[in-house]
Image (tube, rainbow, N blue to C red; front, side, top):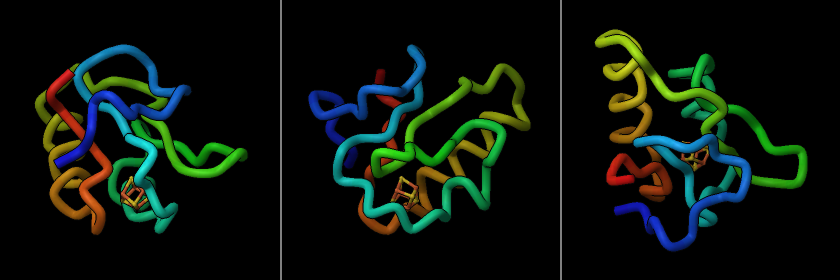
Length: 75
Ligand code: SF4
């Protein structure tokens, strides 16, 4: 489970976030590139929150595939 007390600084506000345990494997960007982006300083961040069922489904897929559970949806 992601740690909402350790969110990456660049996440946009909203339901989904990436925490600092991210190992930059790139899977979330491959799955949901409209919502996740690479931070040039390391790690990933949520660049946009989904506002459709389809977008939510992609974010949930990215969350469940993250190998280190660094993606959260618990605000
Ligand atoms: S899937 Fe998880 S570990 Fe991989 S880049 Fe995304 S947030 Fe980081």
